[in-house]
Length: 416
Image 1: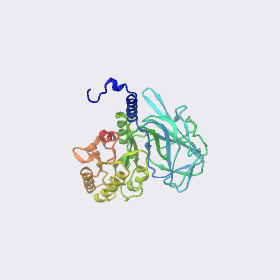
Image 2: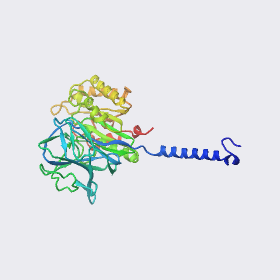
Image 3: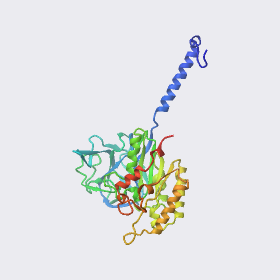
Image 4: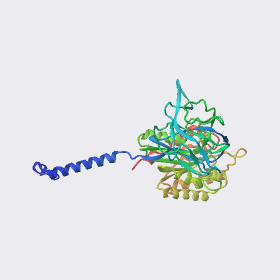
């Protein structure tokens, strides 16, 4: 008898038949289990709060717009009151899908929602929730199918008076508000009551989805990551391009991309609310975090920090990210030339940037390196951004953002 084969008489034995059936069933079940994607909570969109808004909110509904970067079948939201000095009560909250109106080759967006998409959000079973001063709350999960690159609307009714929101003040997306004292329109899918817009994001910290995604890639940085010089409602930052590429490469199990950039932010404590100070709150706290891309330090240099100080900041962030079991990818600093009389950059500061970039490229401290400097610098003048990528001698144009987003090798995020 050939090795590994049973002859017919042996197979006729009842015990052997039963054992074989059990073994085959186990193998089949194991294979099916291995093939099933693992669903987990993943932050599909986020933003960093940076200040209290000057806008006053009195018995008013705010409708915050956000584009999720991976899909799922269940949603929950996170509300933060990071810079609030008093608790804030949300009377009711809803999440729905923004309605897109098309005319020919163009489309328009507003506070209008797709009919039937708006879902009530509860917090430990209650419609009302109070966010403590400096605190954070998450909603209960709500069954809702969302798609990658879909624009969701989180509507919050705030019944208080003269409330100032903890906010991200320079979002690259319009959100909407009713007039003060207009009352609760959080459940309303029409746009009529939302009579004004804002480019700030109030209280909404993250949208999480229950998804087969492989995790979330958090981007920690300054205005270059936040999107200065990108197009309002254009979703053309380097973060957006990375999200689109990851989704196109693996729509079923892609990674989310969450943008934690703040204009003017520093890596070190040379300025308040720095990257090392907000790392836990804005990055390490996210559900499903798998990777961090760090693009920070250019503002530190402009404020007088030396290479050693910045490298020490990198090493602290690297250790803390790895300590949470996530990978950290270092990004080289792009050129800057806002020199006097309109700016404060100097040739000496460019030398510090070169030293920092040299350490990023060669130290081996990061799990991987993305060379944004090489992607956007002028080949003829290495201390300058390439002219077609240069918005204001500091920030890239949308084309420059595209060059940065496409410079990131997608194989960095392949699953083992």
